[in-house]
Each structure stands twice: as C-alpha cells, then as structure tokens.
View 1 (cartoon, helix red, strand yellow):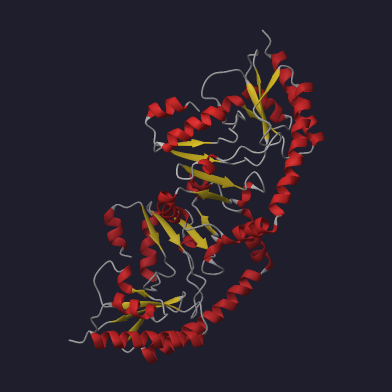
View 2 (tube, rainbow over the protein chains, first blue to last red; view 1 turned 90 degrees about the horizontal axis):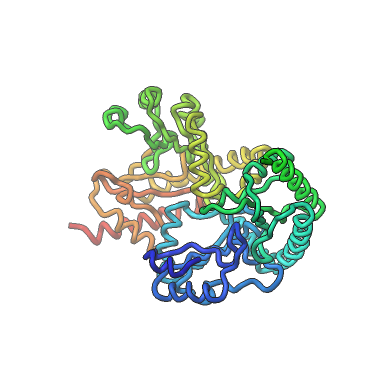
Amino acid sequence: MDVAALRASGARAVLMTPAHQFPTGVVLDGERRRDLLAWAAAGGLVLEDDYDAEHRYDRAPVPALRALAPEGVCYAGSVSKLLAPALRLGWLLVPRRLREPVVEAKRYADLGNPVLAQLVLARLMDSGELERHLRFVRRRHRRRRDAMLRAVAGHLAGARVHGAAAGLHLTVTFDGAAFDDTAVAGAALALGVKTHPLSWHRLRPGPPGLILGYAAGPAGEIEEGVAVLGRALREHLQDHRH
Amino acid sequence: MDVAALRASGARAVLMTPAHQFPTGVVLDGERRRDLLAWAAAGGLVLEDDYDAEHRYDRAPVPALRALAPEGVCYAGSVSKLLAPALRLGWLLVPRRLREPVVEAKRYADLGNPVLAQLVLARLMDSGELERHLRFVRRRHRRRRDAMLRAVAGHLAGARVHGAAAGLHLTVTFDGAAFDDTAVAGAALALGVKTHPLSWHRLRPGPPGLILGYAAGPAGEIEEGVAVLGRALREHLQDHRH
C-alpha cells in the first residue's frame, strides 16, 4: 500500500487486508498504518477485510485498523477461515454515518441472511466454544505450517518463503529461475496436488512462484504433497532445459 | 396479464406469479395460460415465481407453466411460505441455454448460499417430512381461511372477497364506498391489528380495500382481529361522514 499514491489518486475509499495480504502474506505495519489512518482521518474510507487475522502464530494478531479509527474504517469479518466458507457468515462494523445506507442497500440486495446459522454462531460465541476452537486450530495450523516449511526446504530447491507467520498458506517464489509456474501447477494437479501459480495473482511481471495451502491436511500429507510438487517442478525444468 | 399488450411491448421476458397473484389472489388459467405459453414458444422468457402454489385449498394446485414449457420458463420456488422466510431457501429451474450464465451470475452475486440449511431441507424432502408438514399446514390454513371468511362476513359490512381459495391472505374491496384505506389500516394498527391497505399496491385508482393475512394465528385471534378492524372502519366512516 503506497499511501502517497492513494492520496494522489483522489480515491475516496480503499479496500485493504491489513492483517494479512493474499497472496504475499504481508502485514501492514508501523509507518504505513499510521499514514493510512491519517488519510482516513482526512475523510478517506478504509474497507478493512479482516478475513483471517485470528490466524497469527508468532505473536498476538495486529489490532484492527477499525479499533483505532471507528469512523474512518468499515470493518468486515468472517467465519470462512475459522469454521467454514459454506456457512456464508460474516459481519460488518460500519462508521455511524454509513450505518443506515448500508443496512438499506443490504436489504435490497438479498432480503437478509438465513437466521439459524447466525443463532448457532451467537451460541458458539457466548459459550466460549468458538474461542476454544480458535485456540485448537491455531495450534494445529502452526504445526502444519512448520511441517510445510520443512517440506519446502527439503523438496523445493531455490524456493523463497514470503510473508508473516500467519494465515493458512505459504507463498514461495523462485527468484533466480525462469519457468512457467502455471505449467508446473498444472503438472502437479495431474499428480493430485493443487496449488495456485503465482502468475494468476500477479499484476506486474516477476519471478515464478506458487501458493501452498497447509490448513486442510495433516503434516504427513503436507510432506507428501510438497514432495510431489518438487518432482513436478524438477521434471518440468528437465523437459524445458535449453 | 394482457398477452397482446406484452407482445406489442417487445419485452423479451416477463415476471409472473401464475399460480396466485399478490395481492388480487387471481390464478392465471385457461386461455391466458395458453396465450402466454405461445408467446414463450415464439422466443419469450417467462420468469415464473411460484412462491405459494402449494397453498391451494379447493382443488389441486394449477400445474406450473414450467412443466409445460421447460425451455421457455425460468421457474423460481421457495420455502418462505411453507417453512419460514428466515431460512432464505429457494431454487431456480432454468432453461438449459441459460443454466451456465445464471450459475455464473449467481456466483459473482453472493459466492453461494449457506449449505447447512440446504442439507436439512434435502433431508426433510427425502424423508417425506416436508410433504407431511405441507398437508398439516394446508388443513390449518384452510380452517383459518374459513374463519376469516366468516369474520369478514360478520364484521366488515360491504366487503367483497377476491381471488381463489389459495395462498395465505384475503384481499377485500369495498366497491361502493369511498374512504381512505391507508387511514383505516393506520387506525387498526394503533389497535394492534396489522393489514396492508390496498392503495399501497394499486397502479390504477379503484375502490378502497384491505389485504388480510390469516396464516399466522388461530381462528379465535382471526375473529378478534377482524372485529377490531370492523370497529376501526366504522369509526373512520363516522368521523369522515359528509
């Protein structure tokens, strides 16, 4: 986030994931945070998508921007990464002046959300079960992340890992190399291992890379998956050697 | 539905509730049905909102237009009137040629619907429980409708009842009278009885009227509510006598 460029653009609102950017895994911190909040205080609106802030493994999660500037930030949270995306449950904390227009726009958009899942979530929150679940998956994700880091070091020669110890995925780039990451991801998929090639998410050219999720399977599967990926990568490089 | 006017308009699609129009309670039948289907066969698209077709009390429900012209009708069903609107569950049956664009538009609109309520509904359907529930509420609604018809005859002098023996509401008009149905509905609401004044739904001028729901309460409450409404109407007429 280049706040000077944002200021120069004249945009009135900006969509951000300050706690954890996908796919780079970068956390907005320190000076940029302060700079962005100054822009908001001068009349800008930050849409803060806090989609997986609770998954931080090395320290306490960064506080939400919303907590520092409730009238300059429209905060969106979700249980998609915490319970399941198929619940379609999330929430907005909207600056006071925007509350009524947002409620009205939402009503016309969908006539409201199913109430049963919301009641169940409220019960999970009240009872402390959600907090217990979060502590459980945070420990589990941390173990799986560590397993993936070991597997990447062992099987993906030249891979550089990006981002904070957070979220549910690793992004790796192969900085010195020149190969088609989409072809490698395709070859790995044919062998049963699904990843995102970094090219899918690039706005500017750069080194090839892969996005690797570690939340869905146990450490053994992660090790095996990354090994398969390493094989696919080596075979691709061999086939396309000059 | 004036199909000649529809044809002349050049419109490519029309939204209909052929089984039961709100608020008139009219059922699209016979010649108009055939005429509309001929228009669809010539390339028109009917969006059939079948929102409460299962609530027919005097005979079997009219078959859906969709059953007669699957490629000319986009059918929408819902459990809003059968179980609860707060479940936000419904379905579309789309002509084959429109299936992919509709699925894609829906995906971009909302990223999909919550899956748990859908699984519960599928279980209710498979097990026959939904059909049993429908038979139960159909009998109950029929009793409540009869109670309301008696109460209207006893308490609302000059009221004419419209529409088929279907749905969850009655529409009544006061054909010889001239009074402000919005004011009467407001007075009744102040006494605890909520109705829709027909004026809210009118596109053209016409006699005053009221829309009376009977599905939500037992016969005794319905009788009492209509009595209150009759009192509000008489007092309004007395206050505004020329």
